[in-house]
Length: 208
Ligand code: ZN
Image 1: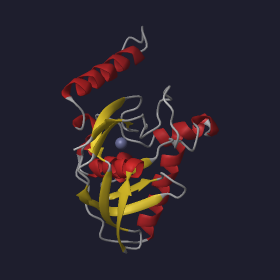
Image 2 (image 1 turned 180 degrees about the vertical axis):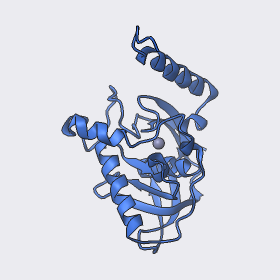
Image 3 (image 1 turned 90 degrees about the vertical axis):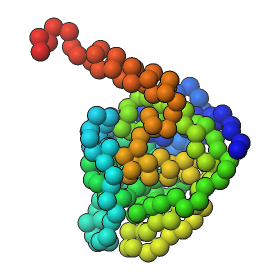
């Protein structure tokens, strides 16, 4: 097993960081704040029980499914993020979208059917955990099996960032967040941070 400590790829691109993000294609500044806010308002965040649900396999490949994928891609792009799972929009269907290179990809009922022994530790963010990143170790190469929007079988190998996004989003379909993929210490740190931020967000003197 090869473990490398890599550069930061912020899965959700929620917080600009000092590190280089060579594959970031859509700088936050290009997305009008109101569009970004409208997209983020649709994304369920930590504490929402739907994020812990196991999504159900898709059996009907119809226009409704295509419409859901369009909605997911729009939210992902405006958020902006490079991946999104249906459960993050409160839809408990096994569908993910991602966009690592030029074209958005929608995968229905995706499964990892093989993975490399080589792994890599990178900091990941998540639109459902705004503003936090944690180191997550994942295989650098995976074989994914899925269906496309018309129900056709797909099987291919993905590596590096694409492999990571696919694994991150499939985790969502199983109710798993990056908090469960990191060390206990990191998990504790993040939960403390989120609690502190919540407390800080309460306006003083609101009386409620
Ligand atoms: Zn996520």
